[in-house]
Length: 283
Image (cartoon, rainbow, N blue to C red):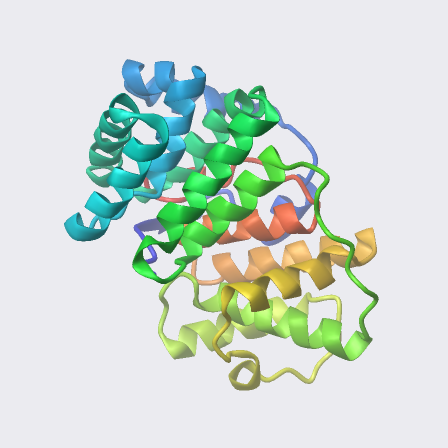
């Protein structure tokens, strides 16, 4: 998937990011207020109303490809009506004309509204989102992130228990995850290898490591399984893994929206609540 625009990560460090896990600092609150102030009034109104929040979430999943988007919009209309289709398409046009760094904050603003809905309404949103994701026969990293965050928010506590796995499996899972993060920003192979090596140096396992061996293609089930295994580890292990993950995405001195979104999904799977990160991605 496209990595999106990036900017220098002024003020960002992997250790600092890890130390802020679970803590809401004044600068995070200030960032949230700046984001809200920058949003168009109709967008801000939408995410605070059930129908508008639903349309915003679905808009995040509408494709830039006109043919695919038409199929997706037809699904929205069939499930929720013409008004919902029109609103989702309007939000999608605004999103596609803006910057990728706005996507995750808008999802964050919409989720509290959607959590207030009844179980049946939440399930309808999850089912519609899944249909939109599957419309083109593939799942992008961004779609994967949206799916994980939606399920975590709208189906809380439904994660299936993960069986105990060996240390060898956990090390392999760690390597494959760090390799994915090292490549998420679209860097060349040499930079990805350096990012992987830097991340591995602070990972909760000792070497040797081999990025080439860890870089096999991951499908959605593979990534779910890996995050399930790693999410069942001890808190100390998970915090070190968060630091290694943050190291991988910031090694080249910039954080793309795609990297920030994937890092957010990883932290959610590890039950490590994170502060706003997309302030480090270009708006």
